[in-house]
Image 1 (cartoon, rainbow, N blue to C red):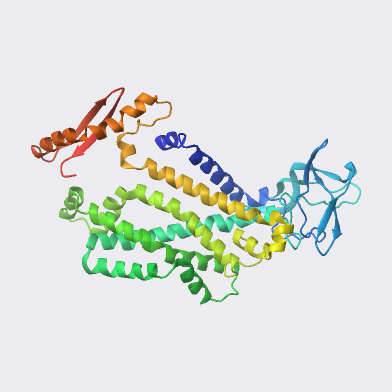
Image 2: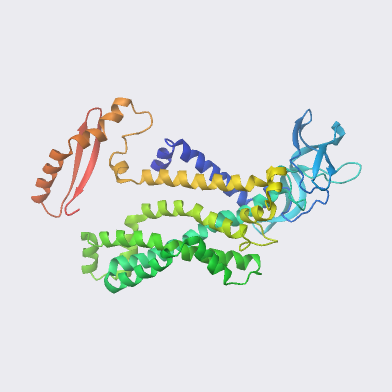
Length: 416
């Protein structure tokens, strides 16, 4: 794990991606504390209200606005410092339960009640929607569905892929043929159309919990075939290795061999494929919710926010802050992809052999002397290794490559 973090430090995009994902998932976990209001709280005088946060002599304040036209919902700022409401941190607000257990009423930020009227002027960090609900609060609560559905669907899809792909690759024959034809049936149909077809067969008026589970299962059924075919090929290759054959001769059950001996050999592939698959599941849920077949009120997700708020081009033109969930989706998708690319490079065999080749702080001469040198001189080296391995059996050898300003150890095993 330490080596992984050291490697990620050499990839700025990966570091930024990790920071963005950690921040978003912390927001998701502590959503009631982070958001100033409940996602269903309506401010009657705040329909399509723009962001009202400003910097003044008092610090960060929420400035009052007044409606000029209730047809186009144009607002104007109210002049005067008496209409500035100071934003404070850790203010008292609506009660909630942390993790559903610990009661609390503290929120990260907000405004206190007016000393004369007792009213609380709302803070709209990203504006409000057509019902006067705070968009920031709804986005924070919506992350609970949008960010978790990717992990849950990926986990279910990965289990199906390991089970079916592992059995097909290890047993071969009729089992392999049946599993591969079954997976090809799902792959022949375009994924989006298959998702829409399966969702349309079910009742459209379901509660949020049932809808969440149904969407997760549908996404998992669509996502497993590609991973299963990849795993099948890997298992089919690894099962010919000597350690697998030795385990089979010792009478170890096939299921134990698959899950205890073969699958651990391809853990890096599973990590990378899962990381790259998560944004696809998130976007699929967003598509379903945008088309009205996903999460419905009172639950909220980023896709449902886009569906309800950006209904026309005029809304998008007059109230551009409604597009904020789209930027969040784009940031999450790019973050997972950049992180997946970094993990793929880290688990690459060449990185394992020449782990110091592009280490941060290495000189230009040192970087040029490692892998290119071995590539230019690999033919005589491999001939020597082949002759040595032919004269030995059941042995492992460690060769140290001495190149200008650097060295690398290469492990050779008989039969591999």
